[in-house]
Image (cartoon, rainbow, N blue to C red; front, side):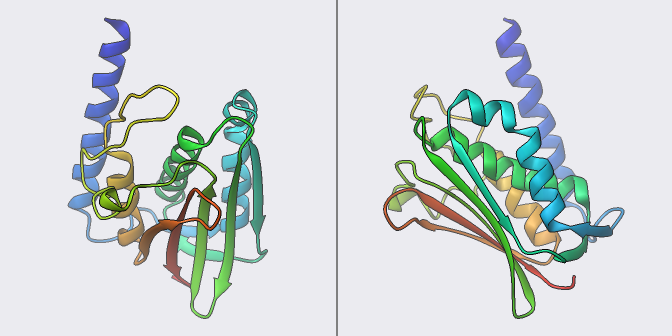
Length: 180
């Protein structure tokens, strides 16, 4: 009962966040964000989960990558991507997180070496309530995480795409305008 109550509370919280984002016209409380620091903080915060699964997390981010945005929302969005990469990574696998500048954009990628996303699902994974079974548990998530990520990225004037990773796995690419 407690587990299900917590799950329902999490779904409700995600739905409220998504509804709020859908109605936003501009970034709330914009601030200057150091992308490398955000990624380093994220990996530090996920260190226990990464270690528990014996996954290697490789972070590479160019220095001096800064953009205007909402730190909390961007952190939550990339945290969702990292959580998905962890969920779909095999034990002793590897996750790569990178950030670089390319022309007028900041490119953030999160890649894993899991089973990958089936082709039939690639167009659906950013839809609300669409979810794939986690390999470890065969359970589905709420299907709200990637919908949230897409809304945050678009609110920041960016785009998001998913593709198969060479050698197996998935690469999620977020492109944000620089400077935003």
